[in-house]
Image (cartoon, rainbow, N blue to C red; front, side, top):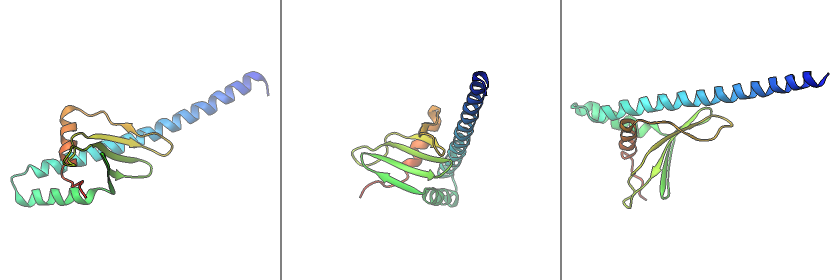
Length: 135
């Protein structure tokens, strides 16, 4: 095989790897978007005039997560594997969330922050504030 053929073959392999990485990132991005939609629906339920809907929303929030971690920060793992999605942020002196970011990843990719609008960030923070992070 000549030098040009080897170069083309190498470039083709690199292009395939890049395409696979992009597909994984898009897969994880779509999962983060779906998790954010679910969170938004839960928080809307908390603001309902109906006691039953508020109770159902709070119960659903408490059943959503896979894991919660706390130190000076917190992490709410919403789903894992490929793709994975989590909420992370800082806790205040009363161990209540004061910030919230939505992050996503897929197998072999790094955690990436999901771009949130101001209202989405506020919704995410309110969602995180529904949990107790004390001891």
